[in-house]
Image (cartoon, helix red, strand yellow):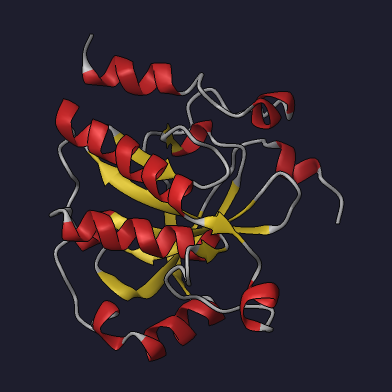
Length: 205
């Protein structure tokens, strides 16, 4: 069974809640997210970079798309599952007494940004290029802000998430994507043109 077929089969392995939501995508959304112009970085990411300057070098790099083989695909699955299992969910309000703070997991707790930052850190330490590991902001099925990690591969953009256990192509997730880190610089953010019809668009505020 080849790698692409494995990825396509993984699309069927989603949480029951995501299946029940009845997400409908366009027939051909594209393997890669369509990026727009430069936008403002999330306030939480600006704060994270102030606290962790080493993680946010203000430099331009050549974007890399990772060539997936069976070993690297399995590594994505394993690291996503390991972090999801190890980190327990807790809001920033409960952890820090503030509405929003981005950091690495604190004593095994965190919200979606902590999951993302930890996965990004571990993958980079494992040799994955930073330009292929992009923090991404979306709206979830409840129309709430959510963060996931986009991994840029030769099979398209795939998503590491703490709400859905499977590693999925971006277009198979039930989210509406807003913006993500630029592949050329971790301190630059780019808007995402997500024109798919999803359940998020029909959720009232």
